[in-house]
Length: 248
Image 1 (cartoon, rainbow, N blue to C red):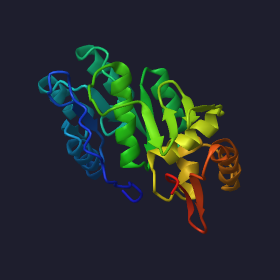
Image 2: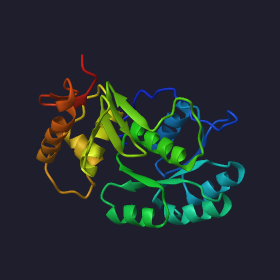
Image 3: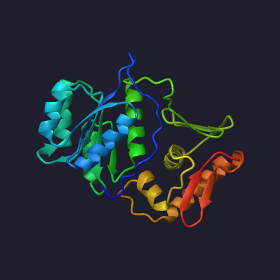
């Protein structure tokens, strides 16, 4: 449980069109982790059921109809891939996000190949996990919120997570896929200092064997494209990392 980061979660209700709460099934054999994820989602107004084995997850799914499932790949009595298939046999089209070990590259590939909608690697940010789940449900058309948009905004900088479009002050900005992921991570954490190590872990594939200097290089790329259109938004906190915040 060492590096799971808590965060101040905004109360933006994602719910069904009839006003009923979203429902999530969280399955992980680490009980503390499952409880942390459940707490974060309940804070958002969701109904959550946790399970720690394949058997208990299937039993829960008989009484609880989830809108989405968070499944650990490795479980004591089976695996998340088989569990996904069993759950979808009962709940057709159920969106699934997999949790994988940081060094389990094969798990990630297998999970997405088998039909998973997304994955996060342990350790992860709870804030990032909640954002991923909201994004999956939004794209699946399973959730409604007047406040829930695909757009991230910091000052006059706008990033659309669905269309992959970025603009500042109405001027379109062309980014590479890595630049986009880096900017998205910064914008999901406005006014928060992010270390190079943290950025490497979240933006680059976890099997990437590069050095922290790659973060400096891509930050400079972003600054040339973003900060050239107005007052600086991306700032260096010496000895700590980087932060994005609206211009003064």
